[in-house]
Length: 283
Ligand code: ATR
Image 1 (tube, rainbow, N blue to C red):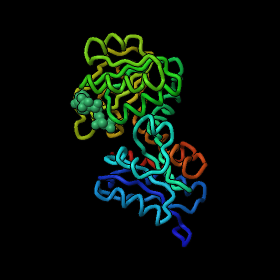
Image 2 (image 1 turned 90 degrees about the horizontal axis):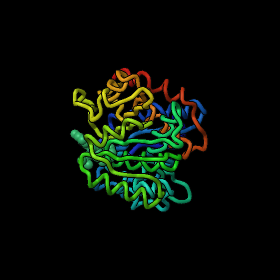
Image 3 (image 1 turned 180 degrees about the horizontal axis):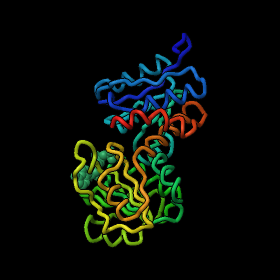
Image 4 (image 1 turned 135 degrees about the vertical axis):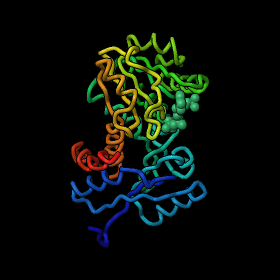
């Protein structure tokens, strides 16, 4: 119930109407009997600064940030926490004495993977070199990955990301070509993560960059796309007998991490899962 004391959390982005995050967070607040509500705010680029100032003025306690504001919003924050600073993007804001920026995207993906396989010492191949790739590759290295290879359509972007990651962490990070090099590296890879929009609704029949003949049974394949739940890449992985992780895991864990930042409490996975289940069925 909304009361005179209810505090607001929310999501800013453009567009925001199709998000399923409110189902998770509101279920979390209900679970802990917390007097918070999570709503969406459609914020255009021109209004971003006013949205942050306005949120502060209205005593909003926390925000998630989505496309296209994850980078731009950093200008309006007082403190950027280390991981978000390295990634160069913020997806979670906490309004405390100062306005603090965090990034839980990478941790979301890594926690999803850690449920089925330890990241420590692993060889990871990441498809794509955009914002999601940046977050996941950085967090994978922080979580102890031995080797991270970035395969991207535009090689220069993969190179630049690999350079950034090497600068910070001094691990084995390289850009590789999509094609023969990717095929070869996949032979002894432990984890494959897709961060490109290939196969995302409505382009569900788009040919994935990696097919079953390039995969082995010991591989763990994670797609960050959750609509559809089983992407073309995950179908190929299933055919190859590899383990699959859907994009829902990353969504849930990044949400759990944001919730923790705002409230200091960790909602149980099944509370978020159950809240999302009816929404996922509609996808
Ligand atoms: P996000 O921030 O969600 O990661 P993004 O920054 O737009 O999204 O990045 C999308 C990534 O998917 C990019 O690396 C892009 O490759 P380019 O750097 O060559 O643009 C990759 N991508 C998008 N569509 C693709 C396609 N049809 N084939 C291969 N790669 C694609």
